[in-house]
Length: 462
Ligand SMILES: *[C@@H]1O[C@H](CO)[C@@H](O)[C@H](O)[C@H]1NC(C)=O
Ligand SMILES: *[C@@H]1O[C@H](CO)[C@@H](O)[C@H](O)[C@H]1NC(C)=O
Ligand SMILES: *[C@@H]1O[C@H](CO)[C@@H](O)[C@H](O)[C@H]1NC(C)=O
Ligand SMILES: *[C@@H]1O[C@H](CO)[C@@H](O)[C@H](O)[C@H]1NC(C)=O
Ligand SMILES: *[C@@H]1O[C@H](CO)[C@@H](O)[C@H](O)[C@H]1NC(C)=O
Ligand SMILES: *[C@@H]1O[C@H](CO)[C@@H](O)[C@H](O)[C@H]1NC(C)=O
Image (cartoon, rainbow, N blue to C red; front, top):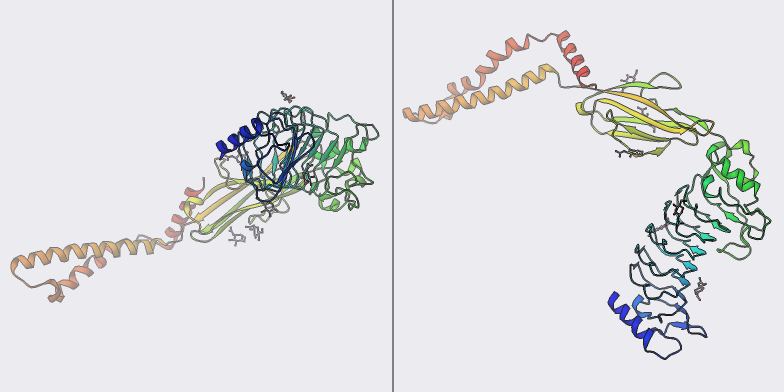
């Protein structure tokens, strides 16, 4: 398909004398024949065949799930490329390697969940990047680092839960749309080098409503800078949003955490509201001390279900995780609460677990607290039963051996089969049980049984 596409590009670029040099009747072009609109349903990518000196291409509403390296290599004159609404699920890491002249790039309304970190590395001329209406989840610190001239960045309507602090370090924006994502914390470093004033010509507008913001000490500096520069457009909100031109509902960013600030608009808060409180352990795990249990013991019988909890609270909600005695993660890191469940306790699961809770001090420094959870597993099968079972097996085995021996002997002596001789049969199966189990059983008194169980417990605690 790729070879075909290149062939189309070549023929389109070299030969045709049509003003609109494309293979597709669905593409139209402007007066100069350099700006294309290929807006259609169901176009295959290699049906487009744009001329090689095209400068603008608006290719929307088609169906190109995967675009990988090569497609745009020869279209080096492009300065405007719109690939919105094409159901794209993935873009190759070198897709735009020869498109250094791109000034505006629209990737909105696709099905992208991630972008390769080298995708934009050649685009130092880019001033506008629109990745809105996708399913992006994470923006790392290198994805945008080559975009040194970027002014307008649209990341709204995604599932972004984290943008690295250094993600925007190489540029200073005039417009940043982050609405309707899953962001908790806005880093001060995102904007610390932005110098625009709210009333200046090149002012900066920041939209970040529709995220579950945690209004705590980590966002204090961000808030302070945004507030003092009037960067949150508080009135006429929406008039410059790409998503709607007028009559946009006025939505201001509100806090989701902590509980006492839930639903409060950020703009109505003061600097003093952005506080942290250190994490504390709240998981009890059968500890009766209140409110804090740093060390706790849990005792289980072998075979019963075991649940080990790890929970903590604080502002922000701390990240919690359960590790085992040698530091391996038993769970992922989660907000507030995690637990480990063993459906049926075994001796192997006895040991020391650690509930690790990471939060922040009042002054914003990271703080970790832990709860030690000692899990004891008690063997349930009683020694008497074990002895009985052992002897029983022994008896059956000996009996069988004896019977076999007798059988062979009798056959050799010319007797009939063993089954016809009831006396011999009885003797063979019963004799060992009565003769061996009696002395063994007397060696265990009730006290001895308890001692053995306690020894077991100590042995199985690491
Ligand atoms: C591309 O063309 C469509 C249909 O004409 C239009 O709605 C859309 O705004 C264009 N995209 C850009 C980025 O100009
Ligand atoms: C994108 O996110 C939406 C909303 O959460 C979901 O319904 C959809 O399945 C996701 N699509 C992909 C391709 O992940
Ligand atoms: C972006 O910034 C980092 C650190 O400031 C720097 O190392 C890197 O070279 C910059 N990238 C570009 C393309 O300017
Ligand atoms: C673990 O937490 C659950 C609630 O999430 C609670 O019902 C249960 O009693 C806890 N178990 C222990 C041992 O504390
Ligand atoms: C929890 O404590 C109660 C009462 O102290 C005790 O009966 C129970 O066995 C303990 N459970 C575990 C799992 O240690
Ligand atoms: C355990 O989890 C922590 C925090 O999520 C992570 O940093 C660490 O790399 C994990 N360790 C292992 C061995 O997976």
